[in-house]
Image (cartoon, rainbow, N blue to C red; front, top):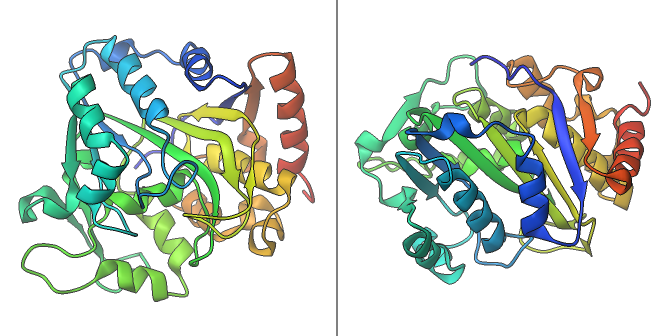
Length: 306
């Protein structure tokens, strides 16, 4: 996969989620969504409220913005790791929201074998390779919305790159092998997360940092309220800025130590060409005076010790 050509991360500090998302999207040309098949990956790993899961208003606002440009269809697809996916989506109101807003909701655990693309193990840390949803590999456009939080089960942080785990199969029909069990016991977990991302492209990422977990995670933790929304085309760039936010608020040792581009998820993704290759290629753009000040602070953290 070719890396996105832009390391720009747009940022807005706001107390209004819907207005903030609308302001961010003014900086993205969405006209190309016309007549396109759009795959949407949100964050519904569990049935815990935001920031453990995507805020329903974030999903609704994104969908409405996409629909203004007349896509052929929008499919939100998900596999939960901490709960039964359909139950999680029901509890979080996403099944209802899909019916209300006119987008399709697909439960990846219920897909047949033809819905999965096998990725060989060659060149990865996956023992048997893995299966990735064709909804995302075959889509004309892929939009992702992630949360801002740490991850106590080995990922260290769960932002845009880690959100991709939810489009990989736990098991596939006719098979008994548990790919998620392998991932979570592997000492290479963070590299394996990055390797998922080299197998599909993303056109737009929205990170909802209105609230964040700076420790524990992904379903609970010490809660802070940055009141930030971020947007980029580049998963590495937006994750590097996300890590900077977590560092600003005081986070875990695993997230805090060393250079940001030496953190396993980011380093491996960078080596694979998923996005930008260094902090120098990231441009944080604040959309108003208050946001510009935040962008300046985060830029200093991003470049610390370099």
